Image 1 (tube, rainbow over the protein chains, first blue to last red):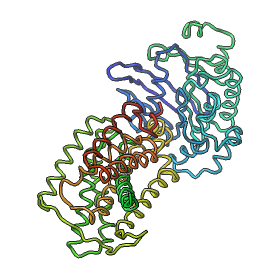
Image 2 (image 1 turned 90 degrees about the vertical axis):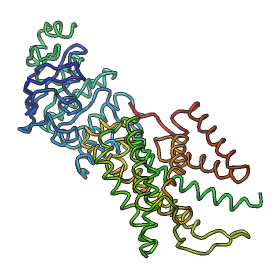
Image 3 (image 1 turned 90 degrees about the horizontal axis):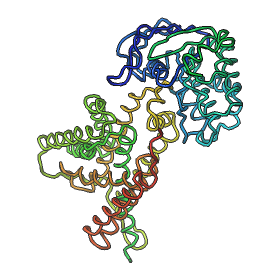
Image 4 (image 1 turned 30 degrees about the vertical axis):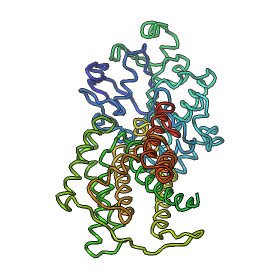
Length: 233
Length: 286
């Protein structure tokens, strides 16, 4: 579904990704792990068109997307939950969700109902300003906002950062349920091993701008050596 | 103080026109970070559209309809040819739009000459209020300006376009990841801003002398209104316009125009020093 070939990208003259290649299947949850500064966020931003690649190719569902503007990448069916959530603090929960529908030219009453079914908290507080939410609630809103137009693939950048452990587990279970129910493919950048074990089918380890190793989640359940090597834990 | 009511009405009229001019500036600056030094010239071109329609024997309403259309189209061309290349580069936009303002002024001088022109007031007569008479057109202008300000507020606070515009102002990158075409939003917001300037010029034309330098007289207080009120919420421009326009107009009558200008600049300096984001302004979300 999402193919990346020899991708080189970065900031000005500092290239963070160097000839990175990988393949991500639809309907599967892949975790991307690695120490800070290895290029995980840069990879997600490059897929979304927020960073222009120096060279290489990104193909999504058969369509070349590496030169598309960000809004067209989103409309092609890739949802994005950025690091730090980036919800619109001054807007209500409902308006945060409505923005995503407007951006995709959707009326979306059914989509909204589905989101409220998945995340009842948002229905209860739809008129509340998003800025008044706790970190975990804001993360749920950011995920819901990315899901509402019905993407085929979802990119999540460290969704557990700064969130209480009990909420992390709930978010992981709910995302796994949604992925199973909708056939959604997910690429999640994550440092939290419990979250990865709850949610992911597959894990890729990143170092110095390259995917160094990948494995099924079962291997991580029995063997911590990859975590020692790539995360120093 | 027996003249309190006419002076207050004059000040209100000036404030509403100032807010109308500043609204266009604020939309363009708040959304795109573009400091449009040519905004005064777009206001001036709106007035010249009115001069031209009246010279051609067309009714006043034709000028009111044509001014925002023509100036809006000019805004579209300016955005496509110049502004889109320098979004979010304030220093570059100051230089580029300053150059544009000079070019637009010279084009007007070449076409219409350097002399001033006048526009006949479309509604003669006055209304007697509390023992004194006040020109009917000024009252109408106040009503129309208030309606246009309310309409702009409604577009930006109550419609889907406005919701997307506010999202683009706050976090352009995030808005794009939600499928919002930010470049298109910038373009149409710029066109709305310039069309408002053109309309304001056409509306004010019967009250002032229309000449190639007239834009500057509204550009400076327009910028000061944004500075004082804050570039974020639309309400900020209203407050800024009320402070700048009110102080300028009332003190000019009660003390002197020089004292009024000095006070206005002192207020602006104090607000920059004590509240750099303006009275109602908010810092851009990170």
